[in-house]
Image 1 (tube, rainbow, N blue to C red):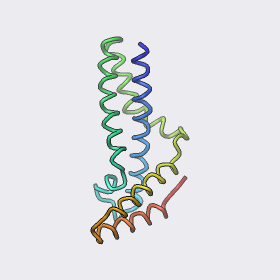
Image 2: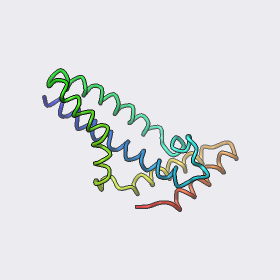
Image 3: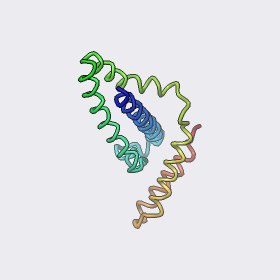
Image 4: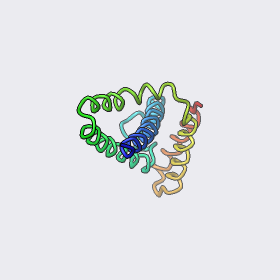
Length: 139
């Protein structure tokens, strides 16, 4: 019982964090119309956030199985509702973590990508993107 609660809380925290990060990268991608292709969010997202997304998916599956075993299928519906709608609703009202925090992560990530870039064309593209991110930052 306690294990299920702990797993659900861990899942909720990670899922909310990655969902909010994805919303920030989506808003940046939409504002940067000249860079609005499908790869923009991938460029803005560090690898560790992607790994957190996969961990969140794994925990969702584990929680789903445990909810079904301990409580039945009705709780699976509640878990699904939370995953598909609850995170979006929570994201609208929660001040934590602030959007500025995610912009700092994105700026740091782009800065590291610029330092590690060996291709001048890619480096110039990343610098231009970093400049646009800094101009469009909102807190």
